[in-house]
Amino acid sequence: MLMRTDPFREVDRLTQQLLGAAGTLAQPAAMPLDAWRAGDEFVVEFDLPGMDPDSVDIDVERNVLTVRAERPPVTGERELIAAERPRGVFSRQLMLGDTLDAERVHARYDAGVLTLRIPIAERAKPRKIEIERSENDRQLLTA
Image 1 (cartoon, rainbow, N blue to C red):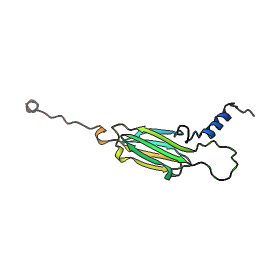
Image 2 (tube, helix red, strand yellow; image 1 turned 180 degrees about the horizontal axis):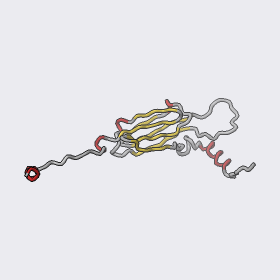
Image 3 (tube, rainbow, N blue to C red; image 1 turned 180 degrees about the vertical axis):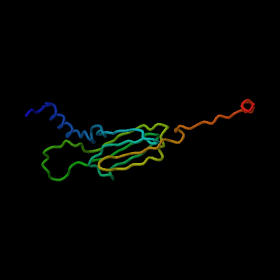
Image 4 (cartoon, rainbow, N blue to C red; image 1 turned 90 degrees about the vertical axis):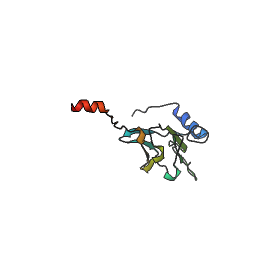
């Protein structure tokens, strides 16, 4: 059986544990996302497996949407065999354009995925513009 080895993997793991790469002293851990437009709304899905939905905080300020969540450290007396799942604070910010209605964001957490649905603002939706006709045009059409 072949095993791929990475001599720096153990150093990276220890550094993350010591420096708290998922929160306290280092940058907040990444929160992978997918985003797309579906009809009249913008949909964003964040992977947050194993998170308590009560630890997730979502706010919008000046068209910046911030998602923040926390996975607490393991407590109690345990002999840790492996610790690869990041713990601590997770944070992600998205700039919402003027075409989105930041007042009507809908959030749902299901099976470890946080889904945000942001409607497209009415003023940004395509609309038909009616053309007015002058009296001269109407006379030409009937003659």
